[in-house]
Image 1 (cartoon, rainbow, N blue to C red):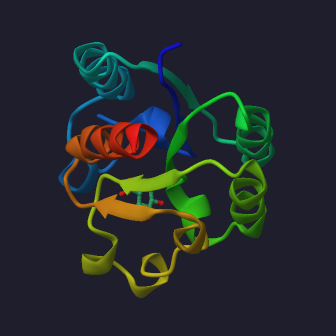
Image 2 (cartoon, rainbow, N blue to C red):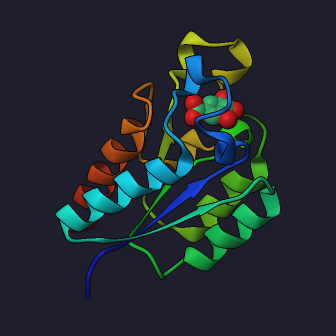
Image 3 (cartoon, protein in one colour):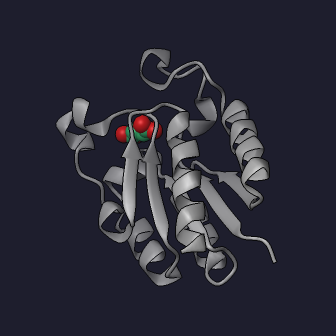
Length: 146
Ligand code: DHK
């Protein structure tokens, strides 16, 4: 059975391409997902992607991922900096988790420097635009194969 990886996009990431392009770039979420799908095919893994603006929907997806996926890649958007619920969901899912962000959080406002989910992640990749997801996918596949 092939390796399955879940990619979650949090709030406002549906606005990629339109929202603050100087920070997040001009690539749309559909483009990001297409690039993830192309790399997944190249690496021979299956990837599902899901975006929600709703914290509870993201919690539901993470809970349902337990035992179903080899790894989780998550850009929790602003919930990164606020959500104990997402942290607890990730801890309970017991999946190797990679936190990704398009922007470099540490070059931005101080409130973005703290991530509630970082302590539950294997690692964090930020600052590479859409490539952060692709680097995250490579890391997830390496973890799943280790
Ligand atoms: C995306 C968001 O929506 C912000 O709330 C985070 C993150 C940063 C990103 O860089 O992908 O602070």
